[in-house]
Length: 282
Image (cartoon, rainbow, N blue to C red; front, side, top):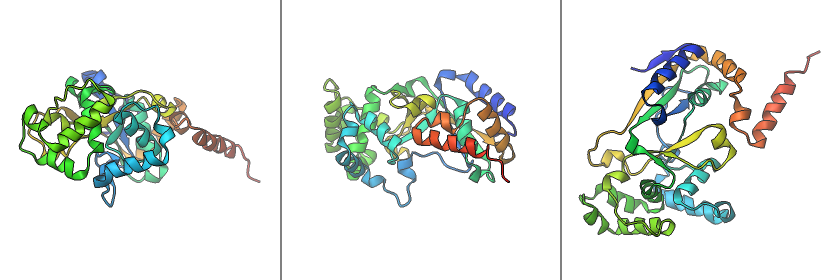
C-alpha cells in the first residue's frame, strides 16, 4: 500500500526510508496526479503513434541534422529528442527525491488532486551507463519498423544463435555496429524486454540541475518471456492539502522552476513573477 504524506517533513522521512535500502540504485519521478500511470511518452500518446517511432526520428533528424552531429549513439539521440519534446521510449527520472517532489507539487492547476513521488528500486544488473551494450541494443529498437519489432516480440527463437537468424535481429545489429563496430552480435532476447535505469551524459544544463537519469524501455513486456522483475516501484502519495506548503518549503531551499529549468525562457518567467510581486496596487 502506498504511503501518504501530509507535510514536507513526512515526505523527507518517507524518502529516507526508501533510500536507506539501496541508495545508489534508487531513482525517483514526480507526478502531479497520483492516478497517472508509469509509461514513457511514446507509449502514452493518443492516438497511439508508437508504430511510427522510426519515422518520427528520421523526420526530426532530417529537419535539424546539425543538432545531432555530436551524438555518437542512438541513446544520445533519444536523450536529445526527449529534451526537445519528441515522444520517446525514455522515462525521465532523477537521483534527487526533492526534485521529484517538486514535480509532484509545482503546478497549481493540479492542486485539487493528490500527487505522488514514485521510487524505482533497481537490481544492480539493470543499472547501466550510456555506453552499455544492453543500452545500445534497446535504444536501437527505435530504428526498426513496427513489423520488425512485432517479429522480435512474438518469435519462439530463444537462443542467441536462433535469434541472430531473424531478419529484424540482423537489422538491429547493423544499427548497433554503426555506433559500435566491435559489437559481438550476441543479443539475449530477454535484454530486449527488461527496462534498464541508464546514467546518461549530462548533455545539457537541465539534466545537471535535475540530477537526471532515464529508464529505457524495450519491447512490450507483456509479450516477453518470463523473467524475474528487476525494477520495483514504490509510491509515496502527496496529499493535495500539503502541496502549497511543500512548494513553499522547496522554494526556500532553492528548488524551483528557475533552478530546475535553467534555460533563459524559464529564467525570464521567474524574473517577471518576482517583480510583479513588488508592484503595489493603488
